[in-house]
Image (cartoon, rainbow, N blue to C red; front, side, top):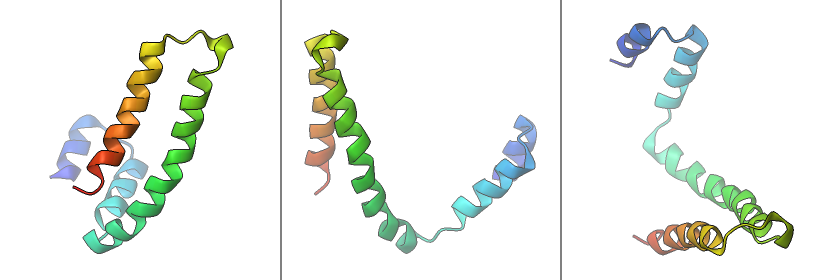
Length: 80
């Protein structure tokens, strides 16, 4: 299915190889690596929130609150 779709979209073969490799990861392996990836992704997002608050950027407060609320939503949905 994926191969046919990629052929229709004229994707390069390297992309097909990457897609095949991603599809070969088992559910258990994916769950094992998800935690570290999530943890590592927090640092750039927190830095992004910090730079939104830098006064020189003149970022509207609603933008900062919106992105911070998105992070709060992520934390609240982790246990679910």
